[in-house]
Length: 282
Image (tube, rainbow, N blue to C red; front, side, top):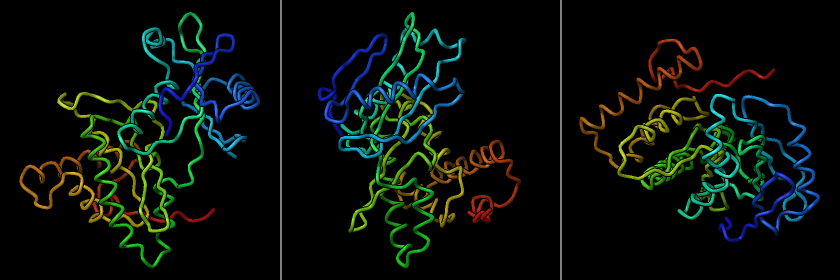
């Protein structure tokens, strides 16, 4: 991941951009701005894959739409989502975490209000965690890989929180996994436009919220004991005192609540609630 001083600020009319010169050129810039300006306003950001040119054959373009009027005034005193994505990616990389490399980030403002913004990232040769787990089911050595991966990922999330980072939406689909020849896995934290770094001493519940986000979805091959293994590694203990047991019950209760709110899940045992089932092919 590059450092902040490797980027250059560029302006084109009302556009303000931070670009990585070695991976950016006029052709790519024109194509990106054309796509961004043609995009219709929507509630959620949109991510599309485009040709990158230069060393990046494919890149991802994430487009952020204008802020709703009732909260747009905040744009006057805060950076845009695209620049926040860029800055948090640099902060994560400096702290030793994996994040997609940003090739460019840009914002268009009028009267200091963000009209449009974008971020372009390199394509990661990995897979989103649910897809990685689905493919792992076909491997004969899946149990050892899964257990090692659970422990490594839990320790990464624990260090992530220990250093004050909080992800805006730490669901399984926002974790990308790569594995080299010796099966050592790397975990990429994606979509960092809402990632924050807060003082470690500040008491709040956002770290707990991340754990609920991670725990909410049934995942291929992930059993209840795997979730307990993750929690034990995250807490850094194999002994379950009353405090850890109470915390586990709280995690279960909040996960049930989120499954009911988001998925309409019915009351059943927690093991059944979180059991992954292959969807029939259409």
